[in-house]
Length: 104
Length: 104
Image 1: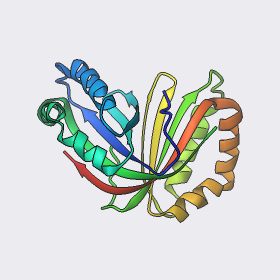
Image 2: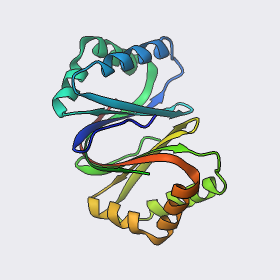
Image 3: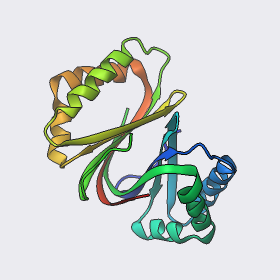
């Protein structure tokens, strides 16, 4: 479940969200988006966890350009819109450069 | 639950972990460390979520120096050691520079 990312530098998108009570279609689309993201050029992996209605998903990318392209992906844009208007009460997205990493 | 961080740039420590079955003392020490971290110079906030034994905790910091000092904090070092030998099957820590953020 810990993403096997390459040696830094690479990029991370930290997506922190509070879900609404209207999760119609959420799990289906979330699964589709995960599959679609993993097919994108520059995708390096993803990690996700949630406690009650609060979730953190971190996706890892080779470069900023790959992140931009994924953000502009047409199917992803439809899902983003549904997220904004329906599934999420609030969210925050942070675009980061991973400078160092280490593990147990 | 979404940390109210200032405008970028700032820094994030993404701590991804797989817990073991031996969680004796874990919740007490985790709470203490959260409190201690929040008192450190340069601490900006923290977010945490976990699904089964997989957890993601992201802490936010003003600069790399604050992260280094927190890593070297003596009480924190004791907790880190207990984490390595007892609580965690595996973990990965990623030190990141948050370059941009946006929210709903």
